[in-house]
Image (cartoon, rainbow, N blue to C red; front, top):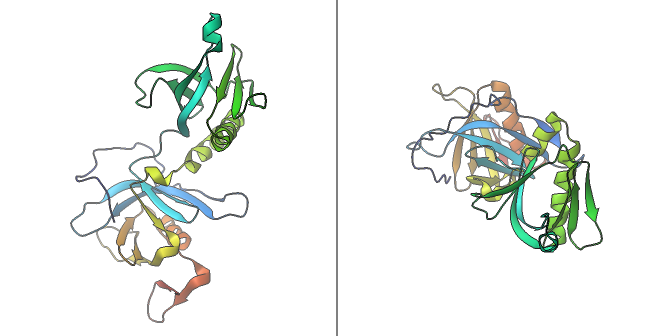
Length: 254
């Protein structure tokens, strides 16, 4: 268990979603996706820390806080100034999509904001076939011309912008949760490498459970017993489990 924080978090999250995680199937029949806040620790001398935990694509991952952007990355934007030169000029900008606002900056330090586009208010998001890897964002005021360096990046931006444009507030929240990126996580565990998951008899921390792998033991705590049992059920792999008599947890078959 590796958590780079060396002291108790000063972060306070006012979101009351600790026990309001949701489950749904990605792509209709894929692996379950679930998220909620858990308190976690990896050893006797390590303090409990509140983490946003996500189960996605059979990977259990935890973050210091919810990811604050739906997508970010470098894109090229065509100038929209009044002069002929500026209208023809393409400049690389750092784009960040936070909720329904697409912001672009001069650099990835995000210190100098160059503009903001309200995606929910956009009239259309167009896959521009006239230029490779490009898309247009059509608003009442102007059309923004943008292109990416790869087809995969262009497709990713087009898909998330199109979803945000037509999303309800509830759907926007779901899109936000789906963006959990293992690269930004404090830690991750491949569900297939979990040896056992069991409830923990901790009088100081009711509704606790333990995740055991070959090289780590992770203690987790929820606010509600229903949430604890739900996490345990999701982190187990029934088709490979073997129950041992006299034990109240599952040990995976090899």
